[in-house]
Each structure stands twice: as structure tokens, then as C-alpha cells.
Amino acid sequence: MPPFGDADNLAYAASVWEQMEGYRQWKLTTPVYKGASPHGAYLRMFSSYVTVGGVARPIVVKENFGGPDVTAETATAKPDEWLRAVTIMLQREAGYDDDNDNWFWVKYAPDRSVMSNPKGMKLAGRVAKGMPAGCISCHLSADDGDYLFFND
Image (tube, rainbow, N blue to C red):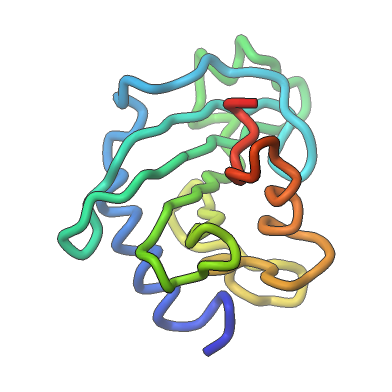
């Protein structure tokens, strides 16, 4: 099974999106803040649990804002106008990807579709596993080895 972009990972990504409905109302959120590549000029994070396949799973949702003249203020006031992608990390069951704390990654377009990398591979699953660049290799550098930067 490929590490990402196959039918199983895309189906799981669709299930996750259904459970994320209303994520902007989650209590654990940040204000819009200055971002960096590859995510966007400005970002906003949300964190909670969602139930997928009958099991509650921790999830981090990041809205990625960009465009000419985007600012924290404009992205806060009109997020849908500046939204370029929604990226998520969801911790799956043991055995999914033990090498990487079982994190499942997705990059959604604003229309909820799963985006592709430059080679046309859909970005859902163990994105860029074993590659020198991408979700996993970048997040491996997070303090405390938890793959999360916002709590460092």
C-alpha cells in the first residue's frame, strides 16, 4: 500500500472532513498569526477530538491564508476570502504508522477536495514518508518529538 494518496487514504480523509464540520467553533484555537512556507503567509490553528470509525482521535487543523495584500486582520475578518488550504494532523490507531506516532496528514483545498503535490499525488495519508522534504520530515524536528510546533 502506498504511504499516501491511494483510495483508502482518500476515503479516510473524506470521513475526517465530515467530522471536522464546524471546526471554527472549537474552543481550542489560536488567533491568526504570521506563518511560513509551506503553509501560508498567515495561519490559524484549531485542536480537538473527532470521532472517525467510532473512535475519538486527537486532531490539529490549520487554516492556511495567502494572497496579495493578506494580513492577519483581513484573514480574521474574511477568512474564506483568503483561505488557500486546510491542513490537518490526526493521530490514528497504533500500527497505522508507528515510526511517526501514527499521524495521518491531509491537505484540503478550500472546497474540501484533497490537494495534490507537483507530481500529482493526492496529499492524504503518511504524506512524504521516508522523503527528505514534506509533512513528516519537517514535523520530525518539533521539540519533544511530538510532531507539533504550536506547543513548543
